Image (cartoon, rainbow, N blue to C red; front, side, top):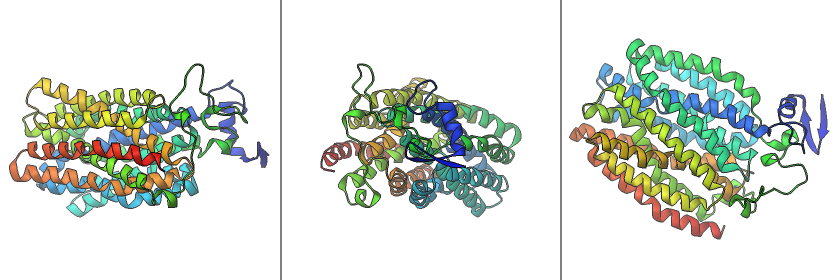
Length: 439
């Protein structure tokens, strides 16, 4: 049964949205966009905690079992970024055409297959195949699609909504000690199989909650009443609301300097982020710590990153996002330098205090700045292309760090170089600010 509601095609499956959000123009129930945030945050929690941050936990057991070099295993694990670079533009375009439900369902399915293949790894080629499948599933069904979905449901409250979404990713890292324990107690193969099966069982029902755009359910972004202009709230003049909403298609975006400076900026910051997350446990093992302590430090990193995610989400709707990004780049540069020279417990605390909030905050800034700059019309395609092209440093940096360790038996020089690369993002932020004014 189909009928028309407020000029939009209304289908029976959207009764779920109306049942939770209430009739358009009323505020008797929570805005359905927040249910979108909750469901996608749960999916991102699982994927980030048991895949993205988990690769560091699998690193040492795989090296020990097969005797491969750290550079080789680093390359295999960095295939997440390399495969992401290839599939992200396709996924982004598919998001705009098919919506998030089909993509997330496909992603969860392939993600589960990837972990089942990983549980059967017997040679290097199979390891690469497993990671490639995980990368396809992760890029299709987890943060990338989730962020584009949430960005569609919010304008004025976009930064805080994205912050709450990616809080799920930060909380996922808290699972690292449990994952390290499971690998030590049951084996890395058995753990991988359990994670793959768990994805199918636990995440599939959440797909039913997800919708592409609020207009498809007779709603408006931010839950604004139908026919009204976006409200600033009581006594609050948000920064996001001072910029008129734009709708720039991909074809026009890729011809602008803003687009390419944006890619450069986040590519430079992604290098040290990817190297730290992949090599964190191997790094601490190399200086005499245990795998268990490494797992605790990953959990601490992601927990402290929540400060950056929430703070940036709150401030990003009130002050200039690029000014915030410059602060985050400075903190991340300093944190990476500290990481290169960790020797005492207090240096671990300093690394976490500097790097973790910057890392968490930059995760929120990328989609928030992208949506604010180019609008919602082609957000999936634009995000896909920027992630695809920008992922190249995320591939090279972990391999470089692993190779430097193989050559020198130390990570120190590698992370000093990566800190310098991060620092180059500061002038890039300045040029991005100037380029946006002429877009």
